[in-house]
Image 1 (cartoon, rainbow, N blue to C red):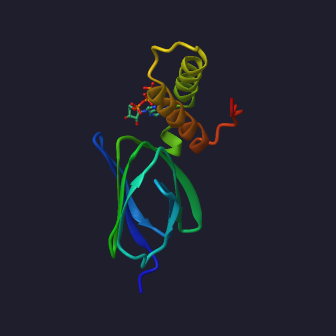
Image 2: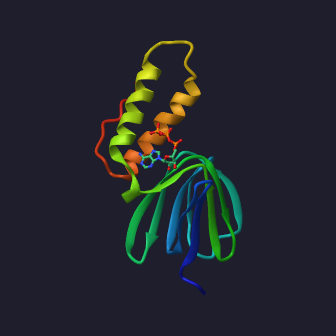
Length: 140
Ligand code: ATP
């Protein structure tokens, strides 16, 4: 019985990650989902958030935008709009994106596309969290 499962993370920009892993936690649309080798076949939507990967006693994160996750007997396919390994995240860029989105959401301007600003904020927060940048998340 295999103790690892192949994970592939793909975006329209290309392959972000491909390797055998021990465990994946992913932000599925109906809640966090944990996948071990031998998991039952599955297809689900993914929300903006973080993939937590365990591999050989190590753990790392991948920030993702929305997409899909497919679990097959020997592999997991993650197909998302964007994905960045935690060490590839430009923290300053994510901070700027967070500030822009927060400013828009707080502006009270009715002409802004709130859903778009909220999604931009979620992406920025996921990137900052994946990069383990310490931040203050304000709930207002
Ligand atoms: P920004 O406003 O900074 O462009 P965004 O959320 O609008 O942020 P996306 O459209 O989600 O950006 O991503 C566009 C491309 O830039 C993708 O390839 C994505 O992986 C990459 N990217 C976005 N933000 C970062 C970041 N902070 N660090 C590294 N790559 C990033």
